[in-house]
Image (cartoon, rainbow, N blue to C red):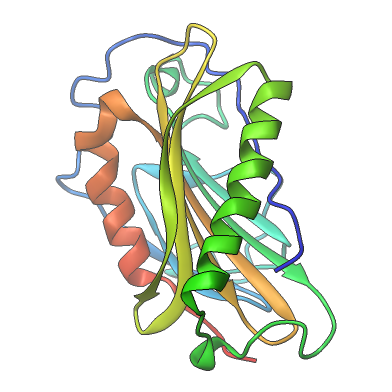
Length: 214
């Protein structure tokens, strides 16, 4: 895996309490199909970042189609700049990096040695710490890379928590999937103080995630 992760250190401007905003009860889910990637469910307490998608079916349908190299989910009503939406922070980023055929392992055959996992961990850790410096962000904790499977799909996962200025700390988790001529990156971010809100939402999103094997 040679491509660098592009870190997005969003500027977090609100320190209000979230209380019961974006609660888990009464969530509904919409299946999103991403061309050249796969599918993932969007919960009703999140929305697709404006400008990142287009609907390909009638609005009464439950399934939407998307064509984008990067798709971002965010807390609902942020596109309309509702004041309530700034009381929390949550992002799900789904990105595909294209390469030549055979540049990566096949999705369902992906495996790594202990040495390879250690090298991958060092590579991403160095990149993230260097990027954090340029944003004057502090890395509070690093979660080392490990091999796992998500819905039967092999991948590498790692993460960290960061603090940017006076904003509350944020937890970030990465999942990296190899898929022959492309690499898929699934990233989850939320404010640690809002974990009770977003952790179960993100668990539901992760359970829905499915990549089309190439």
